[in-house]
Image (tube, rainbow, N blue to C red):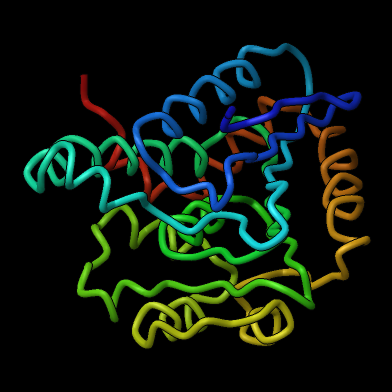
Length: 224
């Protein structure tokens, strides 16, 4: 079973997560990077839409129990978590416009990943957006905190981070952490239309503006 399907419609790349609840583990991290490598290596102006094909989930976060069972806690802290953080960082600084079309539940690491995008579209009628870390006693790392700060409302982001609240699309828009709540039939076409319009922007100029606006992330770039 594959992790990601990658397609291109004109200047818009569509990256579809296709592995159930799309948790993060070693295999999925490799699949993410492979897809992003392909997109980044393409020439010319472009934009990216990231969604999932599951009827219930966009992403349910880290596949932590199997990772701990196979590799242990030290490996998780010293090896896996830093590599996941670098994936969040890569998406947050990705050199083109990036939209997330959140088709279902977007929890924990999945919500942090969605925070890394340039804009978020979410179903109004299904799925919740949630940072449960405070309830499961897993504090945000400094890099993860900076990625979550990219959400349009820092007040809404703080409320989610500090309470573990799980908001549906309509409430998430009202709280300012999601930009658009849409019906199932509107979700992907609207995100694709946004991406098609944004793909008209000069890629190099857009990337420079984006990375300067998100300069707080520079301290987390690898030094070697």
